[in-house]
Length: 260
Image (cartoon, rainbow, N blue to C red; front, side):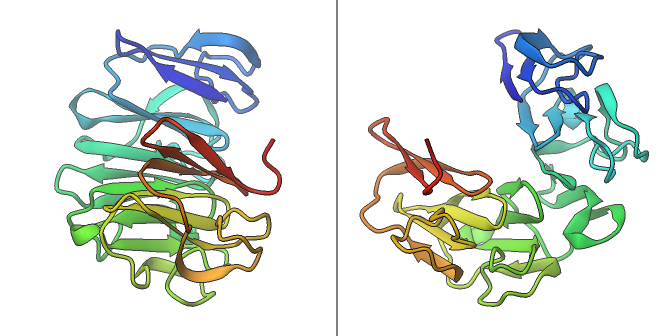
């Protein structure tokens, strides 16, 4: 599934639609963009593996698609083919959507998540121990957030080092990423994580089965490692088992042995 936000602040989606993740009140796959039903005045969107969320007017959050784990936040486990309002969230400033959970940064810079949060049963909660959060990312089993001074914190996980705390232990509560300071961007993949630092370099950690850490070998890392020779990074995106970086000159570099 892909999506786009238009100049009139509506949202269009296209691609796979087996859980209603395109939001057009059907489960039909779409080869061209279709409008998301009843959604306008949107300022941000986030697409997970099979569900989608949007940040609307007044900090409300709307989600649609797969809801087996409660990741739509409407206190049901019913898939939705059109957007539903996330209960209890009215002052969000940023959103992220994953396979098992979705999260929002609130106006007071705390993090609020719903679904299977930190490998717990389906729930909704303010994540403890996190304040002054500036960025957040979730995708499959784990979530990471950036706080004061560019420190990074991660939780959840599958025991493959994706939390970056020097261990292979999963954690239901945030743990600090070892030695990482000055991060300005964060992205998480299936079982790895990456951050962009203030000096525009990249650090990655976790699973490296397909070379997604970009360190030249396939050995995993329990703590952040710098991708050597890569500078002037503007943003980074971690996928299932690959990573992409956008450089200041407009170049996009790919890190995986499976990327085509």
